[in-house]
Amino acid sequence: MRGRLILAGLLIVVGVVWLAQGLGAFPGSGFMDGDGRWAFAGAVAALIGLGLGLSVARARSSGPP
Image (cartoon, rainbow, N blue to C red; front, side, top):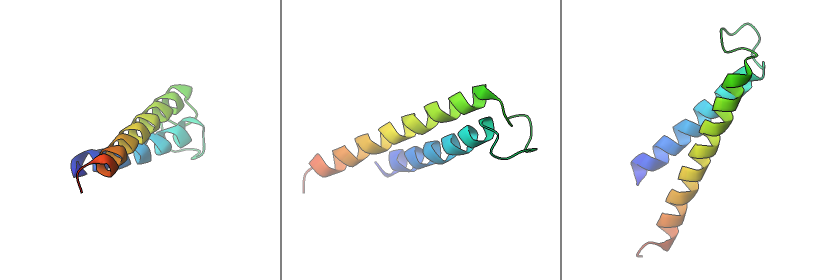
């Protein structure tokens, strides 16, 4: 379960960075700067990470004491 939680956190962080780069928040940062495909990929990665994190949290709260 801990590994899935770490993976969820990494997906969220990477997704937010990709989203910001795709939206042009870091001008001059490279090939990802201002490219809508990276913004979309970042949003998808962050949402997947959020979903994974929520599923891990639910499993922990409903598990045996």
